[in-house]
Image (cartoon, rainbow, N blue to C red):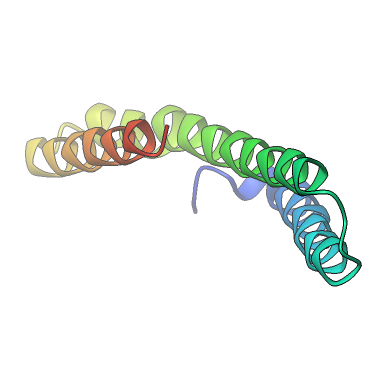
Length: 95
């Protein structure tokens, strides 16, 4: 079971709202809306996605990584830790 399983429905609901925001961006372009308004909405979508990502990352640490460490399986713990560090680095590059 994945770390986010306990809040899967909430995550899916949030991603659907973000999808709606992206469709709204398309309508704004089609309707020739002011560029700054469109850019403001793009920033809002990015922030929303980052928040979902941060929540998933937190769940990964508190569930997957901690379980691997607690298991005593050094190879699994090392793999999960390396995976975590790579993911954090990817998140940092996007900012």
